[in-house]
Image (tube, rainbow, N blue to C red; front, top):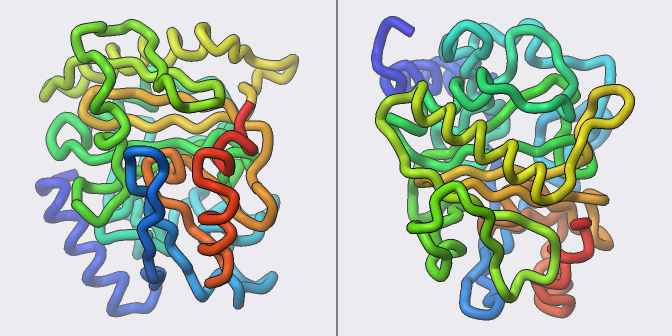
Length: 287
């Protein structure tokens, strides 16, 4: 990129909104308390109106194996390159302003083993602008595209965030797996000191990812693909959650669900979340 990232993003947003290529989703939010943390259940009316013509990539949208929006990416939505191996593009259906998708330039399956270069692309943003990086590892984890990609949301009080969930964890236990005592499903948190030097930060996060996979016994299958999982990274905290399915009843869950934001298709699904309980719903889709 030839200009600062946020400036490039904002210029791209302005053009994509004017052309109609960027279509921010509208939703209504209700807080739902889960033990000592407030989750937000977001009703997205457009989800219940989708049909086969809806492009994949919309949260909860259909998956067309022959459609790849990243090869090549839409030039109107493309912000630029992040290093040599990744693009930065606007999410066509952003859940917030400046919502980025970070796909590899060359095709790799979404469940491929993540590499140092994937963390480097994300670290180019995190090291300078912080925010939340996340990854939906396969359709069971909420991914709507097979082309390997990560995503990024900026810090904002209205956005999904890991920070409320790490208050009781220990930053002094660097590169050591930790768990929330009241999370009744497999997961690992690992803390590495954030760095404003992207290469250093990427190396630390890559090692944390490898350690978390080892701790959770997540290994590639005979095709070299990893089990379904969600990964989230914010302020030096990496969270890895193994997944077994995308839905609990009619509620689809992706990585943002583990950062306090659950998106639902119907208004009555908010009551379903309250009835079943957030932590019970999360546990139902995890290994």
